[in-house]
Length: 506
Image 1: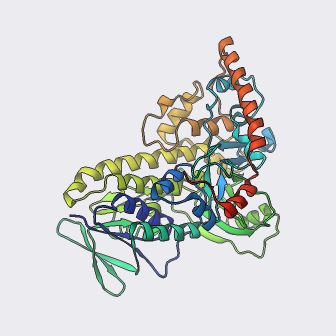
Image 2: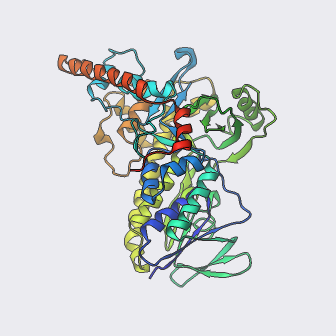
Image 3: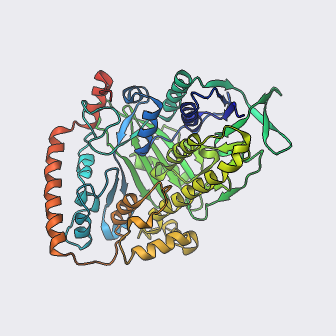
């Protein structure tokens, strides 16, 4: 029977896995130990999430108020993409990938917009949320219960504080053990299963099941079990990030969205917390050298923080061939990495840990019945995520650098994405185009990006009935916007109130 589980590696991935498994196995008398190196630092820059993280935090029994107070949390309602289109054609441009459903008021407004009867940006034409974002409003009020939103939302947070917060909760709520040790080797039994982890003091630690959360090194599943890594750097060209933490004033407004600003060899993330901004310059080292990248980063910041030294993070783009091999499952960066766009790292980590916890094997013999499906579903998640992220680059009409031109090479676009884009040039995307339950990005996500970047199907005339319905939906939307602008507090105002008073429990 599987009674002793080791999670190798801490950080967000390790402690998310610990909470998922701890919650699922609480009544099973299973011992879970997270083993963390005392010398290897975590990456610690994943500071953006998507709305599904709310479900996990609530499931763990975490109070949203405590999370916001302890992790320097701000609300995220969107990603604002700036200059992802050709500025010579479109001028300074932007679009929002909102967290509200684009058809919340009905589908007819989208049909009318596609017919060319609206000059508004797509997100602004169909949603109440874009104007709330642009005016820096919060997604809820102080009287809205925890984890409930008036507008859809996720979070920005301090990644190191988040990992520490998850650690404390896992220990307190689920009795997760915590051990500092450097794991340098493993012992394998006659069936190829891991029987022991071996630390730097040559201690043989016996465990029945191993979760590899060791980051890019994939110290167990990659280095010891030799599961192959499938490179995808020929598709996603950005391979390096420079990161800075920029101080802000306590009086500064807080954008309730991530800003993703494109540049000639990649893009820049800009995430506002309560006391600082996390800024990352993501670029392709084949299209820009480090010296030029540092200059571009400081130029973005107005050359006001040239005394700050950026942290350089090489990014290994791709995924493992298998994520579950024998009695070892990779979670987090040991599984793979897409790149930071759309907050995919924490999303896939949370999904994978949740999936594992739902059907965790109780006996070694169970593994052969569970692992193949896990590998199939997680592989689908990775492949569909590669396509979604690649789409942001390959449908751009920017031609100001070789980077953007190279992103449109047919050889760097999967056959599935190529087929979908060809169809969507003629016909609007349908829900049936996203038939898998494991599509983490589905129709709504694609519509915001495709239409935000002017990738439109053939124009199709709308009937009088559709026009009448769209006009009614637009009237209701505009009325709702007026109500929200009167009802919702500004983003920083709500954060301050939560720190002072807390949110209502559900």
